Image (cartoon, rainbow, N blue to C red):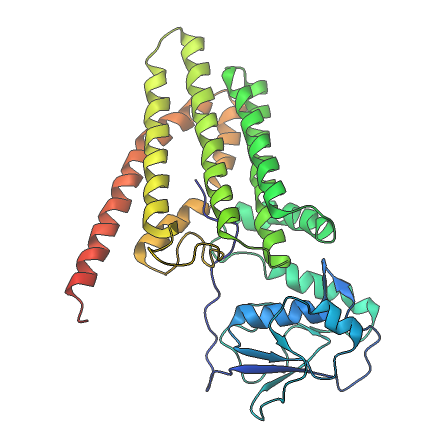
Amino acid sequence: MKGSPVSPAPAPAPTTALALALVLVPPDGPAGIPPETVLLGLPIVRRTVLCAQRAGFARIFVPGATPAVRTALEGTRAELDAPVPADAVRLPWNRIVSARDLAGRPVDVDGLGVPLASPSDLPRAEKHLLRSLIKDTEGFMSRHFDRRISLAISRRLAGTRVTPNMMTILSVAIGVFGALFFLSPRPVWQTAGALCFVLHSIVDGCDGELARLRFQESRWGGLLDFWGDNLVHFAVYSAIAAGWSRAIEARWPLWFGALAILGNLASASFVHLQTMRAARGARREGPLFTSVSQRSTRLSRVADELSRRDFIYLVLILSAFGKAHWFLVMAAVGAPIYFLVLVGLALSERRDFAESPQ
């Protein structure tokens, strides 16, 4: 089970004051590219405005906008003709920054991001933005292997019409297809299934990367990714249990599959109800700005541990020896225990909230 495709909101950087307004100004030196130049699917001036919105700036000013810039900024909250407050943070429009760079609305933006003086600076700016997509909760293999591949894919898809939800559906299809290979007890077929499982994980990273690169996060996308991942896990558990049952001509391995599926389903449903479901009366069309929760609590932080993908490499190792059913046994034992841990954390948080002064 995994969280939504969007990364946790970056922690505000320590500052002496929180800026409320930002203004994009001409750079001090020459800029060899226009502000409407497209970088990873978005004009750079639009990308900066959207980053500032995401970082919490209440007002973003773009004075002296040309017709091309005005077109690039359609649909944003950029103020093109309003007077600029004297205390607005000044950011050169050719400095490429991520939402993480602007977290905490820093008063001093010198040194942030990558300045663009010529087209030769674009690859360095791309690299900076792609690195900002790596989550703080990444596991070792996910950070050093999966992300290298998924970011390379996302970089090439950023300027296309491929949507994050398309990548989610593709990753689910790969995972469900790979589950079929676990019906066989032979190591070669189980390894093929495990490799599909790894590929599913890599492609699954692309949906969130594209969503954050193009500012296309949505609640629907987060929920599709969350339940799509769980569907893949259910398919893998089912196939391993069925294949194990057929290999030994006994029914009892099916109970391990049932326990793994029910435990995973219980945990996923509990996380959804406790942290992903919008509060009554709240707007439901907004994105999930944190991994699985609208707020940071012990429950949400523990639930985010489910987003770590490194366990998939354990499946790969076991499958190479035809022992994928060992993973099923671990899941059958661990999934119900994990659900009980989640329930305990939720009850503890509720008790702490009730006892805290209002």
